[in-house]
Image 1 (tube, rainbow, N blue to C red):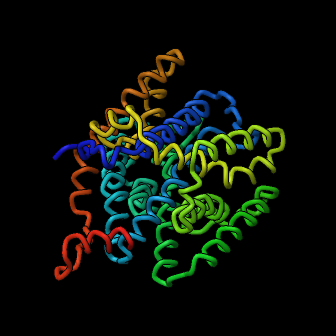
Image 2: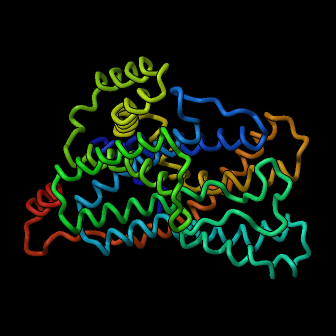
Image 3: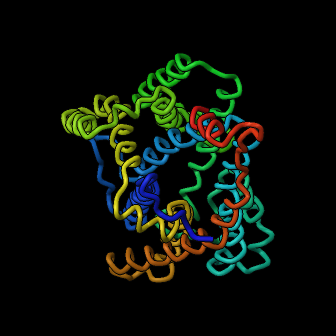
Amino acid sequence: MSAAPAADPAHPVSNFDLLRLFAALLVFWFHTDAMLGIPAPMLFSWVAPGALGVFIFFVISGYLVGKSWEHDPDALRFLARRALRIFPALVVLVLLTTLVLGPLLTTLPLGEYVRHPLFRQYFSNAILLPRYALPGVFEHARVANVVNGSLWSLPVEFTCYLGLLALGVARVPRWLLGGLTLAGCVATLAWSLDRSHEVVFYGMILQDVVQHGTYFLIGTCVGRFRLERFLTVTSLCVAIVAMIAAEPWPLASRIVSWFAFPAVFLTFGRASSVAARGLARLGDYSYGVYIYAFPVQQSVLYLWPTLPTLAYVLVALALTFACAAASWHLIERRAMRFKPRRRAPRAMPAEAGERAIRAA
């Protein structure tokens, strides 16, 4: 089985995989700065590269997962698809981190490492309950006691999936979906002015759930309201100009981002390119890059602390892509074979069945 479907002139390969990989690399950039003690640059006055990468993930995820629900509004199949995309690679990552990386890099004797409460607690990452420390691992790093700081977003993402499922099962009308999205924007704006009272639930900061969930819902609304027809080169230019104009005012820039980011991300994502077709032949490495980059970066810096910055980045990138490629070809792609498919009604002629699926 090939890594991706062969290119079809009638259905060209979109840029979404390419865009997700770009988002993962933005997160890599941000974490590199943090681990080297370099001040992270702010983009658009208020957003760091890593945050922008995560926003990209949530916008396109809201759009594509929303489309998936519209095409096949079955709760069990929906959950199975989402779980198969996230958990197999995540479980392997957690096992490798806890049982291989930890014993190799811990400063504690192996017996003490295994008996330590943090060793047992780290396995909860496999059920989306974030735990960041392993006993004796990266204790003296600049980002101390954090083995994989990227895992915080996975429970937030899955919470968005469950929220979308609840809205779909309840058959929430479009106007109410739009109202919930607007409420999320207002709440995000209020919390951006005061983050002194963070609420933590199941290891997640509630404000982060609302902020990223709002971008997820905006992506969903684009599909639900059929706003793709407005995603043109003109809208792309308007969005870019609006972000540049709002740059001096972080609050205004954040507000503009609610329509500018989706316009840019989804216009680019729905298009096709030579780079996207080339990437499709290799596979979708974006998830692997995202979940493996942080522990790889920490490990390289721990093992070779005197590496020049450029050498450090190149070595960490090479090892990250090697892990991502192995994750895709050995785990993710194979797990996706088990994704349940929607079946057309048996009694319907083929042409009518195809029309029904397109209209679903």
